Image (cartoon, rainbow over all chains, first blue to last red; front, side, top):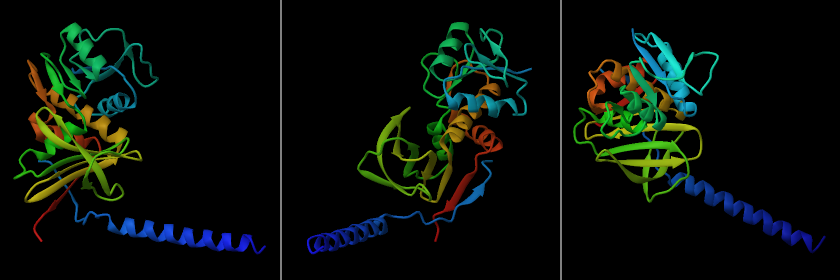
Length: 42
Length: 216
């Protein structure tokens, strides 16, 4: 158990770091501002 | 009486046939053999029809029988409407817009490119490469999923069409056929050369054009 516990803690920290980086990357992506309205081509 | 023959080459051409068969002014839609469908008659030759619709196969059949065509690709020395596709749709949206800065397509495929184009959600930001069609530079952004979008950004307004790729592409071809039926086709003309008719046909078949002003 003493050998597995540090591995579990390290795994949990790595997962948290990856999750944090993913969120930051998605936040950095530009987003369309919207405001579209349907129009008639004529 | 308008008689159309569709040379089926996959889902897009079949969807174009389905859009055309219910379009006002179209009297008859047949498929060119060996394609078969319970919904359409099949003909072994396009002889006697007004227009052949599709891609390479349609261009070949039209050339062989001296019949005008409406195709997704380009045409060499042949009567018909060419680029009845998302490219043609994008260039039709650009007609009449001031200072066009970006013409972009989002299509299913493998992502590549080092510039970013931001499409409306759920496509969002994508990397794009520049491709040239009939002398026009178009940013093509491929990515996961089945959605497609055509977007034109001018100095005063932006225009967009976003839908399922097969639906959008099938209608882009079918609307080119409508332009072909209404034209005296002695030569090759691009779908966007009659942009209002082309876009009106596309809207009547189910596409929605979105527009916004760039003014704050």
